[in-house]
Image (cartoon, rainbow, N blue to C red; front, side):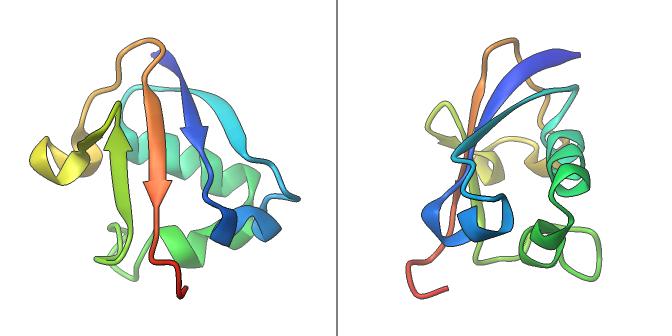
Length: 91
């Protein structure tokens, strides 16, 4: 398990009481998202689709690399990674 930082975009901050970043301990990206959604349940419908996958309009970057270019939600995390959630402006 590694401690990482998740950056929350402005479009989602009203679901996190205006929290801009959250430090979590997780093995992979999927687990980190699950933990984030457990802490802020209203995020779930925006970050996870009906198949428990990432919606196509949501992009996640680990240290500036899109997880779609890696192992997706199974991408392993390293200590001190920064996970950025990016969404369309007109969300």
